[in-house]
Image 1 (cartoon, rainbow, N blue to C red):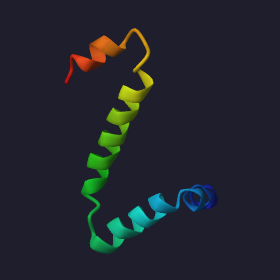
Image 2: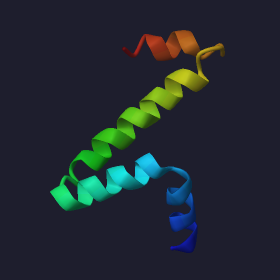
Image 3: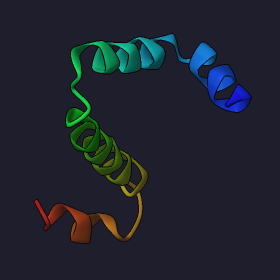
Image 4: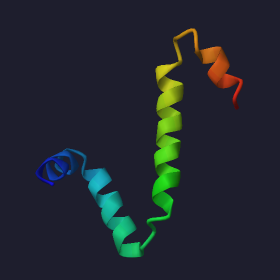
Length: 59
């Protein structure tokens, strides 16, 4: 738990976002946001690689 608190201290916007989700009871949005972030990271990290044409054909 201490490590999570330390990470959230570094990323204040993430902490505020989780507080927002908790207060508004919008936990159903968490999987959507996680998938969007993972998809964005996939696109960013494969941008310059040989895998990029195959990733872009999925969309």
